[in-house]
Length: 482
Ligand code: NAD
Image (cartoon, rainbow, N blue to C red; front, side, top):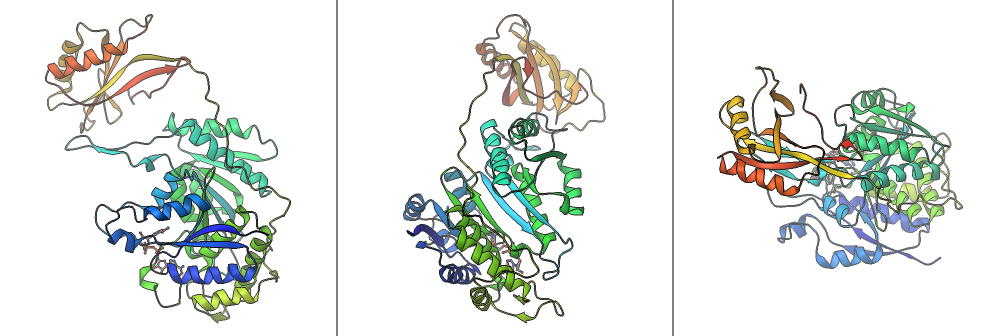
């Protein structure tokens, strides 16, 4: 078998120790790897590179397309960008896959029998990091979700389930509140789910779904979620399964992939040969499957399960009475090496079938044909006087134009013409204008003219959002109480 090129980074804190132990096991397993080592993290940041990675390291990653990464330390203080987010976005690693499994009775867990795979969307949602301070009072973060981004994560979740013989995919959203963003995610889940009749599907509102997931994780199999919910819930499930130190993750894109432990660089444990290398080792198992070396993946994973079963444990999972031998990072790796070729006796052995294709990750996008019609505009304005005075000033500004003032809202709550005196007025007012003549097309120019009149009227606008219908369906939310 020819060797597969893989870029490796030893990272910071406990990173170098757990990477060394992991690579020892990979080498002994017969995995055919040609490793290229790059330097990332703290030392690169402190050299003045705010992204934590040098240009020549990008070249290695572009060449190998596979990255096995130890955790890094992001220095405190301003200006340093998250390396993980940079790599994920630069390589389009849209899917974050985290298998969370409990190993009862060998590792303590609040919940025996967990075997859940979290498939988290990795690029969109609130993680665009598009934030603005709009006024003295008001701060905003944009939640952007796209149809192509959603289609590919949902399809990947179903492909993953099918490929790994899983029976059910559950989707979590908050579409009772966020009808457009989360509503689209849910709708796409239903649409794409229809292509997978062999797989059970269910949808939960994220709040009660999370409660159910923490209470009865055994009822879940594959769970697909938008970015923020996935970020939170993948840690919750990994922790109740046993320890965040045991979980690995894959970041998958159409052409690139990155594999890492879910924990950080634990600087307080660094250099003491005590850290648990299991999270990174299990991430490396996911990598071996990904690059088409399932036999090595199976050998490493089963050898690891056997080691856990034998009670050979690092300090974080060691329990008197349950564990047999407390070992350091290096010794744990050596114990796994001694168990390569063995299978666990009590825990379920894994099987990464040779004839099973990896889940697809490259999906064409077919943009739906939809007619977009401009109806009006929301102009957000700062205004220090009463709502009535604002309404009069805006009506004067709009007097001779094609748009008429319809409503004013504050933080999503209607305050004019209907409102409650109790509503807190803070930050910009959202002033909604619709075309006076709904039977003719509204020219975009009318919006520019209105904005000019608002400015001329001495009203301070902070931003605008255009109001469209798509195939006759409103592409904007209505304020509460309107
Ligand atoms: P952490 O996950 O590094 O450590 C929290 C605690 O968990 C540690 O003190 C330790 O007790 C325990 N722990 C974590 N991993 C362990 C292991 N393998 N074996 C045994 N015990 C382990 O979280 P933190 O302390 O909040 O973050 C430290 C640094 O890591 C920060 O600079 C943070 O930015 C960075 N970080 C990096 C990544 C990454 O590179 N993917 C992820 C998260 C945090």
